[in-house]
Amino acid sequence: MDHDHVHGEHCDHDHDHDDDHHGHGHGRSARKLGVTAVVEDLGPCRKLLKVEVPATAVKGEISKRLDHLRRGVQLKGFRKGKAPKDRIEQLYGKTVREDARDQLLREGYSEAVEGSLGVENVLGEGTIENVAFSAEQGLKFEVTLHTRPTFELGDHKGVEVKVPMIRVEEKDVDAALDRFRRTRGELRPIEGEDAVVGPDDVLSIDLQVWLADEHEVWAEAQAQGQESDKKPLKEEFGVELALPAPGVAGLEVEDLADSLVGLKVGDWGDAETDLPDDFDVIEGRGEPAVLRMQVQAIRRLVLPELTDAWAAEIGRGTVADLRREVREELQQRAEVLRRGDVELRVLATLLERTGLFDLPADLVDKEVENAERRKEFEQRIQGRTAEEAKALVEEEKEEIRRDVERMLRFFFILDVVSKRENIKVSDRDVELRIARMAAQRGERPEKVKEELDKYGVLPQVRHDLMEEKTRAFLREHAKVVESEDL
Image 1 (cartoon, rainbow, N blue to C red):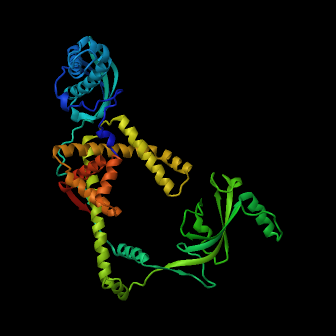
Image 2 (cartoon, rainbow, N blue to C red; image 1 turned 180 degrees about the horizontal axis):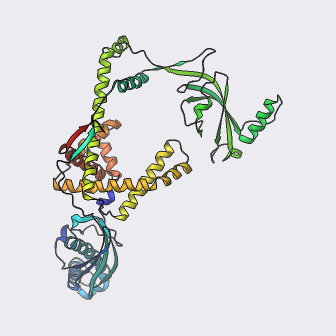
Image 3 (cartoon, helix red, strand yellow; image 1 turned 90 degrees about the vertical axis):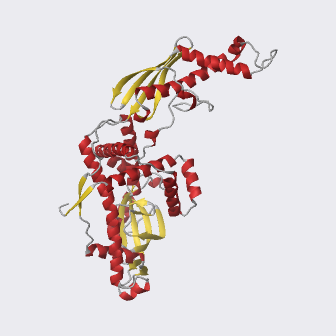
């Protein structure tokens, strides 16, 4: 889950910022303007600040800027720094007032937030609206802000959680060995009169794409031993197909393997589908169709026999040695999963203690939107149509929202723990993470860092590291009880 907007860096002002001025508690904003601010509650984790900067501060800022200009500007007929102030005001007054307004907006915003809410309690930065500015009346504006949820966490150390015992059984080792052997298997032709298509075979087929109604006419004529002038929309020859598959030749087909398993070389199998709207034969677009597939060749993955000789050949000693190695690897994976399980159970326990505290509605809605988009994308990758993916997401809307809210509450609990324990992410931590990412991608760390920086992802890397460190802290300080009942 992304939380970049939780750590926003720019206030949503309706004006430009000069690069030579600093706002939000830096540089010049360290001075005090004497602002007054009234806080109004707009709902859960949402506040309205009504801010006023006194006229004295506005006049002082304008006057200071005019004096600065007067000293540095040389006007025709006057020596440098000697032009009358009213002449400077006449020429540059509008620009000076706009710059003064922008500077005071930044400083006033920072001072009001710090004095009324505390910067540490604000999520991102707010939206400034309803700005009124004059030297006589001062500066007035309103800021809408999101604040961090408030909740009582209590003691986060020593949380007791029950987890299932780690068991690696013989069937688990057998299954892992089969998967390993498949990586070393060899595709071989399956021939002979008794050879039939199996559920995991690789086939070469000839494909015909028919409009459904024309195929029906053609099939009826064939059954009666008559000729038909109907022909397929499209034919392809020597199409490679690895079963099981979600489709063939770019066409989605539900339960495709059912149409082919059990056939011999030379046999035909049929399957139904709907042609896509961008099908290359125009008259078939969006139409129901029948795919006729003739098996031309069958290949099957033949696994190496699990013997001591084979184990020695691949440098794994004996079968017993290989089984022990696989068992240890499964144990290590289970322990990694256990660590994540413990962390989630600790967070769930802490959330039970705090109760379902309020969350910023805008943040929840944004994260729900992102989660729905990811879910829809995942469904498309798995072979579902756009309509099917949207329908599935629609069915799971409530569950998606519950999951998002749960993860956001975990996020804020982790944030409190990291501050309590002063957990930090160093530049060295970030460099090591980037180096690991680079090694996985086979690239130089400098190139990966440049790419992350270009797309603004480095803050997310730092955030992920902070979350990982804080989760690990909770796990390491938890009381973990193994149970056979889970």
